[in-house]
Image 1 (cartoon, protein in one colour):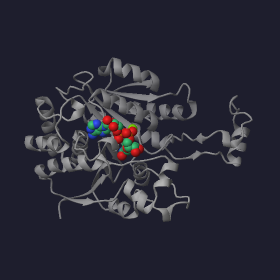
Image 2: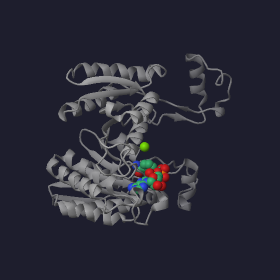
Image 3: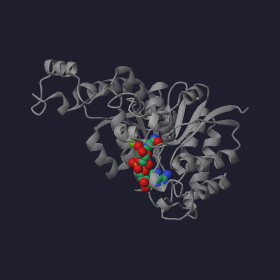
Image 4: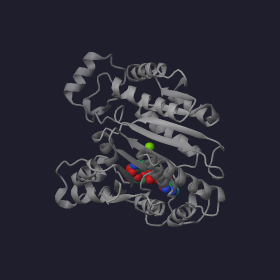
Length: 372
Ligand code: NAI
Ligand code: MG
C-alpha cells in the first residue's frame, strides 16, 4: 500500500500509449503510490453500453486522485450502431465519461496552464505563460437539451419569450434547444478559484471572459458574480473581455494576459487557443478539480489515426501528472517532473512527430524519466 491511491484510467486510442510513457516518469520519480486500473472508454460502451462503468465510479470514490488518458466519443446514432447486437434498439444513449465524471464528482474547476517551454519549436512566442480557469459543470454543457423540442417546452418558450423571426411558427421538430445554465454559486466558485490561484502563485492579473453584452442573462450573471469576487482581491489587477475579442488579443499579445477565467464553453475554446500557442495538443494538460477529487488528463482526445503507432506526444499527459503531484501536495516532485520535461524540450534531441522529430511515445517518456 502506497501513501496515495491513484486511479489509473488509460481509456482508449493514444490514451493507452501516453499513459504508459507517463508511468515511466512516475515510477522513476518514486512516488509512493498504488496505481489502480479503471475501465473507461469506447470498448466498455460497445460491450456494456457504459463507457464509465459503475465499478470505475466506485473506484473514483476511493482514491486520492486520478490520471486519465483519453477516450473516443461518437455521435448518438453511430454509438448505437457499435453496441453489441444484444444491446442495440434499447434506447441506450452514449454519454461522455469525462463530462459525467465532472458532474458526478462536482469537479467544478478545469485548470489549464499553458506555458511555452523554451526551445519548443511549436511555441507561438517564447515566454508565454497563461493559466485558464474554465467552469466545468454547467453553462451550455449542463446537458439540458431538446431535439426534437417537447410541445410543453415549445409552448412555454412561445409564451415567455418574444420569438425571433426564424423560430416563430416553426414545428417543434424543426429546431433544437440547448440550455445555457449558469448559477451564481457555480460562477462565484470558479472565479474565486482563479483569484486564489493568482494570489497563491504571485500572478498579477485575472481576466474575466464573457459575452455579457449579448448573452445578457447568463453571462451577465457570471460577470456580476465575478466582479464581486474581484473586489475581495484588491492586490490583483482585474479586467474583462468578450470571448470573440479575446481570441484576437490573446494571439496578438499574449503577454497582456496572465490568469483567465470563463464559463464552460468559452473556457473550452480559449484553453485550446492558449494550448496551441504553446505547442498544441501534445502539450495541453488539464486538471478537473473538485473539493475531494482531482482527475488530471491531457486535453487531447484518442486521436484514432495515430493510435497504436507510438507517435503521440506524451508531454501533455506527463504535465498532467505534474499537476496531479502539485494537487496532492507533492510540489517538489511536481517541480522535478516539469524541470525534466523542460530540459528534454530545450535539448531538442528527442522530439515526437508533432515537434518535427521521429521519436516514439515511449522514447519521449524515457528521455524525461532519465532527466529526473
Ligand atoms: P484528438 O485530440 O483526439 O486529435 C486531433 C489531432 O490532434 C490528432 O489527429 C493529432 O493530429 C493531434 N494530436 C492529438 N493528441 C496528440 C498527441 N498527444 N501528440 C501529437 N498529436 C496529437 O481530437 P479528435 O480527432 O477530434 O477526436 C478523436 C476522438 O477523441 C473523438 O472520438 C473525440 O470525441 C475524442 N475526444 C476525447 C477527449 C477526451 O478524452 N477528453 C477530448 C477530445 C476528443
Ligand atoms: Mg476541448
